[in-house]
Every structure is written in C-alpha cells, then in structure tokens.
Amino acid sequence: MSNRREQSMDQMLRSETEKLLKNPMNRKSFLSKTGKVAGLALGMTLANQFNGLKVEASPQFTNYPFQLGVTSGDPLADSVVLWTRLAPEPLNGGGMPNYNVPVQWEIAEDEKFHKVLDQGTEVARPELGHSVHVEVFGLKPNRKYYYRFKSGNETSPIGKTKTLPAPGDKLSKLTFAFASCQQFEHGYYTAYRHMAEEDLDLVIHLGDYIYEYGPNEYVAKTGNVRTHSGPEIITLDDYRNRLAQYKSDKDLQAAHAAFPWIVTWDDHEVENNYADEIPERGQSVEDFIQRRANAYQAYYEHMPLRKSSIPHGPDMNLYRRFTYGDLVEFNVLDTRQYRDNQANGDGIKAPSRESMDPNRSLLGAEQEQWLLEGLGRSQTQWNVLAQQIFFNQLNFDTNGDVKYNMDAWDGYSASRDRIIDFISENQVENLVVLTGDVHASWAGDIKKSYNGPNSEILGSEFVGTSITSGGDGADKRKDTDAILTENPHIKFFNDYRGYVSCTITREKWMAEYKVVPYVSQPGAPIHTRATFEIKNNQPGLHLKKDKPLSTKIQKSNEVEGERIEAQDKAHEKQAKKKEQKIRSN
Image 1 (cartoon, rainbow, N blue to C red):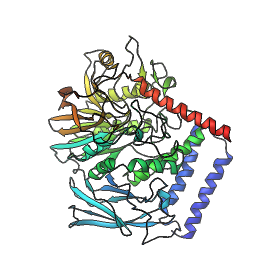
Image 2 (cartoon, rainbow, N blue to C red):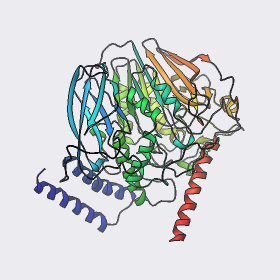
Image 3 (spheres, rainbow, N blue to C red):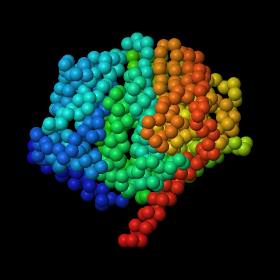
Image 4 (cartoon, helix red, strand yellow):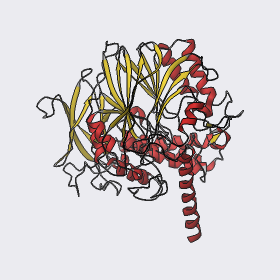
C-alpha cells in the first residue's frame, strides 16, 4: 500500500475517534460508533499487508513456533481454511517480535506429500497475533487432503482435512461429532484424544471453547486439576494467552489436526451470560464493548474461519450455513451476539410477561430471517440447527410450579415459537437441533406444543455434555428423575463428560453419547453410554442402547441449579479481587 493511502486511512481513523470522544451517546449508539472505529482499525491492518513493518524472510525462533498445532475448518465443496499461529512462547503473547513473517503452506493428496496439489505463502502479522488463515480453493468435492506449514527452518505438524460434497450430490452417509464446554481447570481433554481416533467427516464445536475466569475462581464440584495462567481475561493479550493455553493441550490438538472443524461461540469466549452489548455484572457498557472487541479478535485469530468472519470491532459475523450434498444442511447459529437481555434478572425463574414478550429476540431480526429463509428453501433430507443453548422447553421445578432457565430458549419463548410455527406450517422435514452449554447429556423431542402429551413431534434435540466443565460426573443427579417426570418429552439425561458422535444416512440418524468416567486424571477410557435413532420422515427419538457405567457413581447429590451457583461464586470472587485492587490503589 502506498504511503498516501496509509495516511488517508490513518486520518479517517483519527477523525472517527475524535467524533466518538466529542459526542454524547446511548448504549446502542456507543456500540455502533465504537464498532465503526475499531472496524476501521482492523480494516487498516488487513488492507495494508505489511503496514510498514519489517518482513523477516528467515526468522529465528526462540522455541518451536507451531506449539499451538494446526487445524482446518469452514469446508466447502472446493475450498477449506487452513490455520496455524506462530507462537514460540504461547503464554507470553506468542513471543514473536513485532515484524511480519512469511509462512509457507502446502496441501497434498497424500500424507507423505508426494502429490502436492497447491502451495503458497501467507504473511503472519503481529496485528493478528501472527495467526495464519489460508483459504485454499480449487479442491475436489468430498475429498480428504493433508496440509502443513513451514516458517524459517521449522515445519508444523501435518493436518488432515476434507471438503464438502458438491451441492445436490446424492450422499449415502455422513459422520461427525459435536462438542462444547471445555473449562481447562476442571479436567483433562481425554475425550478429544478418543474423538481424534474416530473416522469422522468433521467436528462441530458449539461454544465455551475457553473460560474467562482467573485461577480457581470457577471451581468444579470435584475440584480443579489444572490452573488458568493469568487473572480474569480482559485485554486482547489476555484473550490471546488464554486461547493459547487451551490450544496447547495435546489431546485438543490431535482432534483439531484430524478433521475440519466448524465452530461457533457461546458466552465464555467473552464473559458468562453476556447479552449483546450488556455485560453480566460489574462493568460499564463502554468497558464491556472494548472487552468484547478484544475477545472477538482473539477468537478469530485462533479459529479456522474465513475472511467473511473477520471482526469489525465488537461485531463479528459467525452464523453461516454448510450443505452436504442432498443429505444434510447445517445452520450454524449465534445465540449470544444479537439477543435481548435475559428476562427476570437471569437465572432459573418463573416465566413472566417479559420472558414471553413477542418483541424480544434471541437471534436478532436479521439472523432469524436468514434462518427461516434457509429452512424454507432447503432441499436436503435432514435439516440441522447447530447452536448453543437448550432449545426444548425444560421445567426445572419439581414441586408443581414452573421455572425455566432465562438464558436458554425458554427465556425467549416467542423466538422459539416463531421457529416452531414456521417448521410446522412449511413442513420442514427431519429437524435436528444440536446443543451444548449445560454440561450434561440430554435428548428430547421438539413438540408443536408442550402443553399436551399428544402434541405433534416436529423434530428432536441432542444436547451434548461438556468435554470437562463441571469436573467428574455421575450417571445422573439428585433431581434427574423428578425433572424427567416433569418433562415427558425429554427422553434421556446423563452427567458424565464427553461428546456426541453422529452417523447420518438416508434412512436414519444415529447419535452415540460417548462419555469418559472421569476427567480429573488423564487417560480415561471411552464408553458409549446411550445410542438414539431417528428414522427418516418419522419424527421422534428411539432409544437403541442404554448402558450405564457400572463401576462408577450412579447418582450424585448435585442438582441443576448448582452449575449456575458455581459461576455466581466465581463472579463473587472476581468482585472481591476488584474491590481489593481499588483499596490497594
């Protein structure tokens, strides 16, 4: 880029910043204006490839630079994103000097790279944490490929990826796994090691890839076994270091290298239970908007996302759609960035006029319209919502009253009703919702109405347990039997950690709940706790396998509300630390 253009963009950025500082604003205005300024700043970074910095063609690294491994993602029929980040000192901001570094990449048909199909060079820049996102095009549909990176004299591990089938191709089978909620302190990522050994076409991550808490603020019921590096994360460097700590885990790296990933976030990638520009507690909106921008940029830097997801300040486009031939279409949602604030002060509360307000939205008007239009014109046999929070109605009160989780779809019942009504009226077939968030396995049928046992079944929801969050599990909780009795459309619950592995064919959908008996130590075996089947064009779950872990805890003394209480306690610890810091100053 010429010096004249650099000066022009710099002047534009200064002008917008001055306007922001001079003019009083409300919340929405502040979000819009700060997003414009931060977006311009990042736009300068991306438009100006070298930004006047030195390009070190033959870098010398203090340590191995590919310590965060490699991954691929956002597959298309002719394209995939290849990712890595140069980080010789992962927990020290990456440990890279403030200059640009060329990174060579290559993609091949074979693991020994005898048949290299394409290669090139990307520039790893300090403005994006020396991360690399290569969008490779010209690939063949439904093919496996191998890839690697090189910088200086160092070569990355080898990754394996796979493209989507061509649109409309008649497919016989797809296999994938989905996972969520991996609090680093709560346990070891053994489940990912087992996942990496499966024969999958892709992995979907439904959020809570990291947690924002400082060391031992959020404590698992069975105790923490690892420790977060650094305090509660706020700044861009904080979020980079936290993501680097999580991605340094070798079991997670193995799963990342084995398959292409499709990712979306929930709340802990920024902060617990935030809603659009509204923080949880104890922050000004202005401070939170900057924190959100920091978190979004770091998330992009560490995920295999396309340039279409580059954040613009505190805004980032993450909802998108992936179509596997004529078999299945995944609608990947963002239930955090556009939502109205939680009703009734959040928590597990009785429904109210506020929570049922038809003007409230969980997805935001634009995303909701995008979803409905996509479902309406879908030509695939199976239609999937890959999203974060409990979709089905779930009454937690076992004493004859009604209490819902205000952070879930129950707290935005009008949003759910609009989707359910559309599915019913337009006869959307074979609907499956994939969910994370709640640190336990559930499975249930989605009903046209939850007020009667004979209401039509429109689809099913598979809720995956956490990878580690919550610590060691049990077969069920103290209140499980009573909750299942209160919610007859819910067919299954389990409280061990793990993930869900799915096989989709033209005849049926098979979901296997894979669990480990413990996460407090490494090396746990994997166990298929339950298997469910959905038959083509016959809505409703069928339990095919139900095999408890006979040698482990059958029932814990925990109840659902304790998961929320543990995070409330974490917030109290954070508040006390902030008070002490203010007093010491």
